[in-house]
Length: 345
Image (cartoon, rainbow, N blue to C red; front, side, top):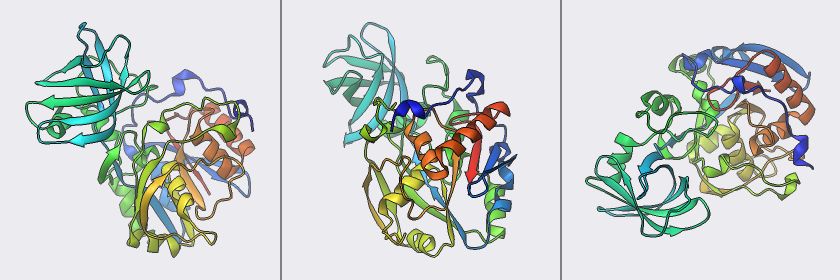
């Protein structure tokens, strides 16, 4: 399959730069696969489209405030995106991180951050990826909590020199997030409010939390011409016994997000059953994939020629997804992380 065939035209003004005023006031498109039907509604109506026997599976990974701003020895500012913690002691932490811009940085250079914290460049891993050693007056975990920014994707614009973005720290996080470890939000879950959760409970719809820590691979463009040549970076997941039991007893499994979908499809056996376990997955789902466990998918609108867009095409059919995206553009839906969503059933 050619990657160029999985594209669409999106006006730039439809890329959401800020979250909706209320989480559950986002718009939601309903796609009925068998009938090829498209309906428009509001996310707060989600319980109306679920039925007895359904189980919602959510990703409860918590986004860490992984974006920092520092200054090179030249005085020029740069952005740091933390990727993977490699070592941690009482006096320092070593992280694999992305730097932008990374030109002219050399090994042993010191990057100065505010509030008595600095990062020493230990080793260049690739053009933009470095191994950094962070040393602070207090603990680096406390520094991140107080000074780290939400790791927003590049298409959401914020000024480097602006403040702490408290709104982003709250809204680029699901209300049920528990296990810290993601550097990108499982964005389909951003629409859930306490009121929607209560309505689901009142209707008897169980919610099964699993964990997949979303990594930098979610930002990476597919730099291949053939879809089959793309390789995803591994991401860590956990599913406990209680969640596995709820999922295995479901009439329909409604996956909240592509991360949840990939995790379930990675571990489901030929009968669609899953076992409690933890590990890493780099499952890449594209058209032709035979879904073993997921029966419905709640997902945001994704970038063209992205692995997430291809997953949606695999689940609902490429033609139907392209038709629905055109409907979204025509009806001024908002796209990407802070945008609206669709429920595919």
